[in-house]
Structure formats: structure tokens, C-alpha cells
Length: 154
Image 1 (cartoon, rainbow, N blue to C red):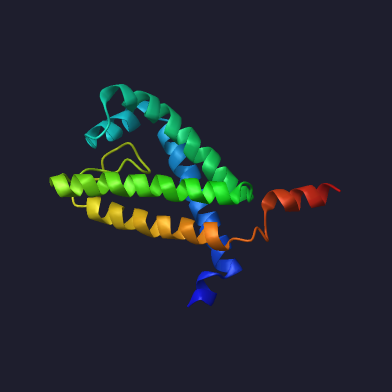
Image 2 (image 1 turned 135 degrees about the horizontal axis):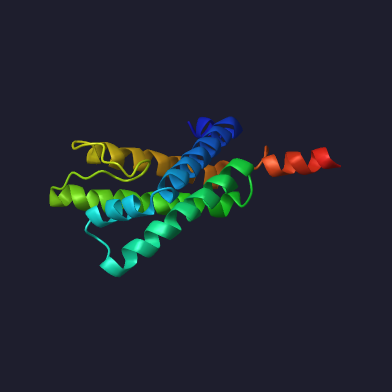
């Protein structure tokens, strides 16, 4: 089992998938900061003064994080940050599940996707966090895109 989990191909697949997910999520949220601020507000966790700055900053963090994962730069830090963010997202969803609130996660769209999906979002975030942890421990940067581009130039 450990051989499958530590496979370079699996790590590459996870890294590219996570990078693409974070890039896409960041781009979508950066295009509608007001809608994303509303999604953050719906969690009813953060103080009001923190919502707007987070709605502006988080999409850019996600885009830089996604780019780092796709390009193969800062992989240990990027995968650790990804797992931390996903853990925070999962915790926020779990808090709202415990409160009996069924909210839209605001992950990939600022429009509501309807009720009945908070449990799915929580499980998805846990799975993505496990992928990020696998990348942190097992990615050996054997296919960093930046390295390939640098070698091609020389």
C-alpha cells in the first residue's frame, strides 16, 4: 500500500490536480469579490471586519498556490499550505454541519448551488487535504515544469 501512495506518478497527478483546482477556484473568486465575501459571511464564523479583506486576499493566495503546484516550485511549502487551507475549509464546513446549517461552500462559484451539499463539500475537502499531504511527503519534484523550461533554454 505504501508503494502505491508514494508513487511518483500518483504524486504528480495529485500535484497537478490540486494546482488546477486552486488556480480555477482563485480565478473564479477573484472575478466576484463581493459574491465571495457573501459566501464567507454565510459561514457565520469570522468577524465582519475580516470578511472583505479575506475575500480579496484568499483568491490571490489560491492562484499563487495553484501555480506553484502546477509549475513544481516551492512544492513542500505549497502542499503544506494547501493542506492547511483545506483543513481550515473542512473545519468551517464541519462547524456549520454541527450547527445544522447547510450552506454553499463558495469554493468554485459565488452563486449558491443549493442545499444538501455541505456534507459532500466536507468530504471533498478531506480527500483533497489527503492528496496535499501525500504530495508533501512523497513528491520528489521529478517533473518540475520550471526545471524543464530552464533546461530547454540552455
